[in-house]
Length: 196
Image (cartoon, rainbow, N blue to C red; front, top):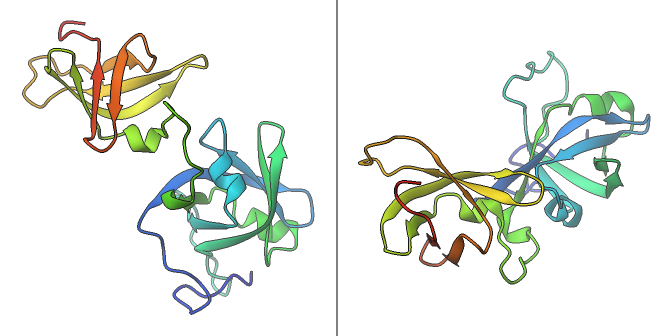
């Protein structure tokens, strides 16, 4: 794999704003293409970026002695939708064995390379960590994740540390319940009561 040695002049440094956006599911075909599982329903970040940063899967095997080091940068020659995922051609990977060596790799792109979100559209990564309060200003907790139910997303709100009940709240991320999202102030205002 000719992707540049880690830390070499031809390989950019790991981006400070790296966001995990998918993983390599498997090899695709015999010419070195990879099948990619995107974490987003609309994988624009992967489709638009030509440099994907990669990390070994947490449970992946260690490299065999004498094998090529695991690349931290994948230069993408071609990427397209295929079935329920993506397939990509990586510079320097020319056969199925090279593609199989990447199986399970975690894929990252810089947040700065994401396409701009439309009006009233938000990337999940931007919502995680925001404080959530109701219309009366009562703190409900903070967003720890989201759930995609198909027709809508649902905010997973962890309770305040001083809350008597330590149960996570699930609040539909729809206009009927969400009054305001202020990314600059890192706050979401919802029509939701403390006892819901």
